[in-house]
Image (cartoon, rainbow, N blue to C red; front, side):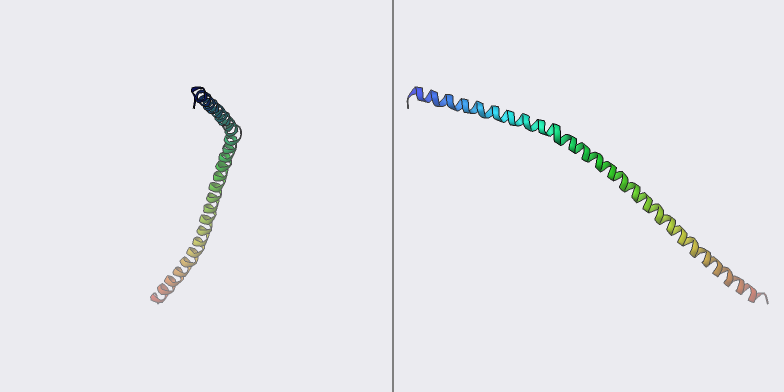
Amino acid sequence: MSYDKIKEVKAAGEAATDTAREELEAVKAHLERLITQHMVPALGRAGDKAGSLTEQAVANARELADHTRQDLAKRTRGQTSWLSIAISGVVGFILGRLSR
């Protein structure tokens, strides 16, 4: 191969390298624009939505816990009053028998 041919091949290789580099830079810039314009706002909205859903879930859990606590308190109070009446009746019966 002659020296001129080698220079031509080398120049063509450098030109192809420069073209490829420029195309890669253009793709990189386009990708950065795409991410900045579309992905970042979408992720921000998704984060806001997740935050509001989390707050709503916490509020629902608190409401459920309060409801369960109140229901349990009502049940316990009802059983305690019947139990105290039964104990008073038994104690009264025993004291009445003993006092004769």
